[in-house]
Length: 224
Length: 224
Image 1 (spheres, chains in turn blue, purple):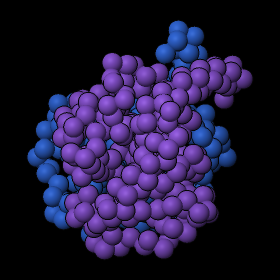
Image 2: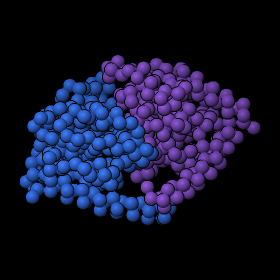
Image 3: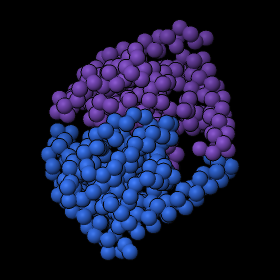
Image 4: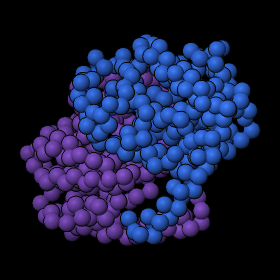
């Protein structure tokens, strides 16, 4: 890349980090556990979120910001919970930015929410560099994508707090080796926790919801 | 985006188009059918290419340029054909650019090749804007990604010449509706040809290899 492009990128990222820090303070002050989800297209972010919202309702209230180049398909699918849903259409932009999230939640009463889910554009590369003000970043890999994806897309894992291994019900039929996957992941981010889940069969969802509730407890113990 | 960023992007794309035009002339003059493949991570580009190279050998000679953020896993897998293989590691860059392809093939005798396959970084967004000098652009969607992906990632389809619907052997177990997929695709690019393939079972590979041979015949009829 040219020196000029690197400078422009650095300025964009610095501006993004400012907005993200402001958002993070707002989420923490409101006692909201903000979680972002990133993955390839079709790894099952929306399907997992649908199942998650169903499990969290009616005990908890969750807002959702979802990014796609085009369509409001996901926002319509995610209107199953007790909270607001906002669809961001990015056009040709390959990731969400903090300013998009800030605009999306501008009119929301964050104090009325327990969770905020931020579903990124389906992309394992570009979302890596953009802080969205989330308290935790979750990266999904579907068993159908093969075992070596962690080795081939390291940057997104550098800032991840949890990996979800999705479509786990298809591990058998696709011949997926969980050991090989965990080995590849361990070489990029040793010790990063992994939960195997299937939104279709419900396998692993108790553990995932438990992880979310523990995160909420942590935020609440810190909130004013 | 800021006006300045748009200008920098336009300059990068204009420069890329220049290099791509130069490459395209070289490929055509050498009688090489250059085909690029783009898809989500894990849609099966490399597995399909492995099966393709096996079918083309020994009758045809194919070179492969493959892009990944990291690792040379794919280049090692693709060393099954009769031609050269070059692994591009892009670091954090989310797509291949024409200059990367030009550097990759710099030492190759293009006249000794029939096909050139350019496997892009796994990404359904960023590769859309970058001409690589290919004669045809193939976009892969795996049945495991769901039916609505064409609607959600339209830019990559605007410059596509063929869609491959991969992992077709998993259509039944995943409950994939081919009709819904074709409907979504038809709304973005009506008339774009689709071939359903499975590298595992071999379904559809005859049609795919036939499409490649027809493309080679077209290039040869135009080459000097």
